[in-house]
Each structure stands twice: as C-alpha cells, then as structure tokens.
Image 1 (cartoon, rainbow, N blue to C red):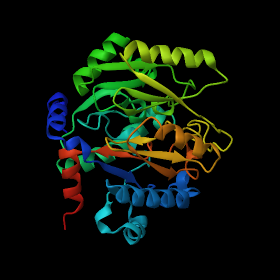
Image 2: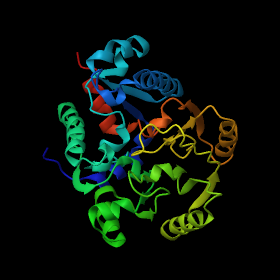
Image 3: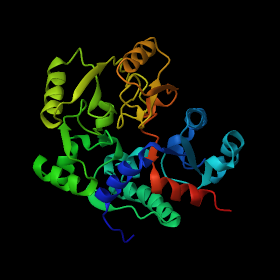
Image 4: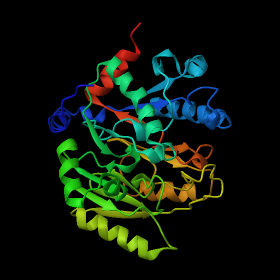
Length: 340
C-alpha cells in the first residue's frame, strides 16, 4: 500500500470534533476448521466472542466480527448480518497484528513472537488484514518498526506505555524510540518498562492499563516488591503526574495451553478501555468481585464485566482479541461490511 503519514492531524481532528467517543470493536473468528492450533478451543472462542459482542452492543458500542466461511452463518444467526463480515483472518488476536493508536491508527510490523518466533508467518498474518484495509479504502500509515498492539497501552491523550522489548527488537535507545514513535503517533510522553516475564511476547498490556487520562492500574506484585518498585519508578519518571493504582492480581498460569504465550488468567489489567467504558475481564474466581470494586472506586466510566475464563489459558482475552477503531476509520470499515 502507498500510504501517507498523517497521525498528528487525525488526532487533532478527532479531539476537536468529539469523534473519539464513537467506538467500533472488531473481532476475528478462528481461521477455519482445518487449523489444528485452535480446533480444540473453537467452541470456547466462539462462545466468548458471541457473548462479548452482545455486551458490546448492549453497552452502546459497535461490533464487527471478521469471519471465515465455516462460522459465518452461525455468527449471523446469533448477532445478525450487520455484525458479521466474511473476511477470514489468520489469527484471533486482533490487538496484536492490526493497528495501534486508536484515535489515529498506525500499522507497525507484527513481531515474530506473535507467531511463535516465525517472522514470515507473522508477516503473512498481518498481510491478510492489510488486504482488508485496502478493500475497505482505509489508508492507514505503516512503519517497518516492529511492535505488537499488545505492547502499546495509551490513554488517548498523548501518553503510552511499552515494554523494553520494543527497544531490543528495533535496536533503538529510549530517546531514539521516543522520537520515532512520537512522529508516527503524536504521543507526547511514553514510558518503557521491563515486562514481568522475560522472553516471548513481553506485552505491556499484561502489566498496566490506562483507565483514564494519565491514570493507570497496574498488577500487584506482593511476591516481587523489587519489580513493583522499579515498575512504578519507570512510570513516574516518564509520565509526569501519573496516578498509579494497584489492582489485585490472582495470576494463574496452571492452565496455560502454550508455554510460548503464557496465560492471561487473573490479569485484570488486560481490560479493553474506551473513552466511556471499560470492558473488564472476569475469571470465575472470588477475586473478581474485589477487582470490580477496586476499579469502580477509581473511575466514573461504565465498567462492564466480561467472562473470560474459557479463553484466558490461551494467553489473552478481552483486550487481546479486540481491535478498536473510531471516527473515519470505523465508518469506512462498517460501510464496506454493509455493502450489498
């Protein structure tokens, strides 16, 4: 694609017009029944997506599921044709291989770790989505810088958190990375943190979540106070005046199904945050009520509990499965999906 870089202009336009409040959440079905990796989880994935999609629409946001042919009719029977597009993707973790920076989208190069270490596979997965953007007439800026969407957590107001894996993948210093990311996204302040588990994905969205402008929730680390101390120091140093709230973190890695990706069970930081709502993971454990009480005490946004216990052993859930779009990008994709 031949694309122009215009994120700062778009960001300003969205903020001035108020379009930033209109959210489209896009999910992707499992690839197909021949995909051995997801075959044993397909019922859990589809059930989660249908229930989640219903909550999205009930809460006032829009939803679109990109489906393969095998599952298309089922999704339509559950959600209606206006919520489903026949546009099969090669993976379900839409957050990672699509675009980041919701207000002014940018496509970074999907990292090899997202596909178990194979960069060619990662590029192929991303190309499927890039072709959809072309068909829908979306001109999204691209960069050769490597990063997954799960390693970009922002507050829609000029601040972001990434893990230092970004620096290693792109062989950049923090100063160089800040300059390049700021030019692409318009972000003014960014913090680089160490991931709490080294190796593999090292996504920031398993550690922190912006729930409001310059307001973060972070995991609690009672067994690793040194890491917690360094994490807070990195955040405070790079994000002036940031408000940090620790949230209960009953992390459970016992049911992990793929050691390359760990587990997302018990990670409430893996929430999907919009300007008006927080789609908040729940795992069917006693700590769910505590986490809900904690999050509701520090935000005026509508907090929507989303049951995620069937999919979290795969390494993701609410945020990981969700691409967020708004404004012109959302309108163009929905218009394309609803063409006869």
